[in-house]
Image 1 (tube, helix red, strand yellow):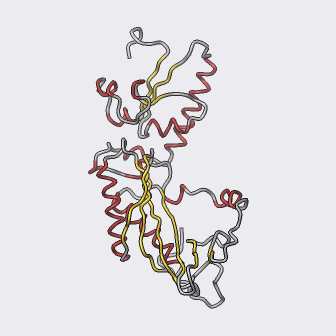
Image 2: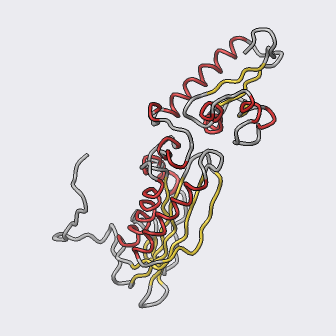
Image 3: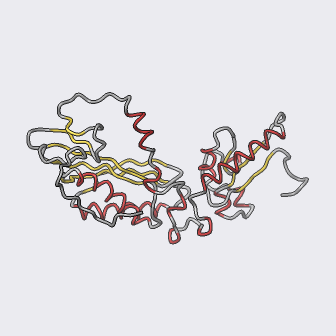
Amino acid sequence: GHPDLCLPNTLNVSFKNIDANTLLSELETIAASAGAACHSDKTEISSVLTAMNVSYEEALGAIRFSTGRFTTPREIDQAAGQIVETYQRVIQNTDASNFTPSTPEKIKLTQYTHGLGCACKLKPQVLEKIIRNNPIPDDPNVLVGVSTSDDAAVYKLNEDTAIVKTIDFFTPMVNDPYFFGAIGAANALSDIYAMGAQPLFALNIVGFPVNRLPLEVLETILKGANDKAKEAGISILGGHSIEDNEPKFGMVVTGKVHPKKILTNANAQPGDVILLTKPIGL
């Protein structure tokens, strides 16, 4: 900007290939705002930046920093170091050379997440520390709970029927929205099959950045999931959605199984056959 005709305490910086709110959510000790001040509570592109002919990609990553009367040069240097470190950490899984604007025909979903698929899961050792403090259910109808780390929970309804329930969702591990939806559905359904159960119906779980990606992308994700559910012979009866900085998709799937025909991690016996659906290796 102009060296003299500008506010001396305000700086607008654009970070390429990342949404400003995603970066701000990682800056725990720095207070700043996305875009112009009048758009600080939204993730849509600022009209001020648009009027300045700032490109769509650069406007998405625009952050407004302000200094106060008592801000010191040392504090500014510390903040700058934290910002650079955080940006590099968040962007490390993004291939900046392939970055494309958010148009439906050029979407690459993996550029909108800090991790890929199951890589975003919490570490097992972290979960174990948390879960070990939770009470273990003493309901005799709970046939499979948390103790065996199985793919789904199983609850006995009567002598002939038990309900099998799973929930699974993750961030994109592929670029194509249709295949992301199909993979998300197949992954959740596989938890039911792994228990020896028959799927009955499913519910969708959606996290979607409505101001970063066009809604046509979400429609395509859901189409992929619907097609996979149809292939499994079940219906998707609803679901739940939230606005998120990153796209996420998955399902809650309900199934049924005979109480005496449940397959669990704890039931393996010597001589059992292991079926591989793909080659072993890295």
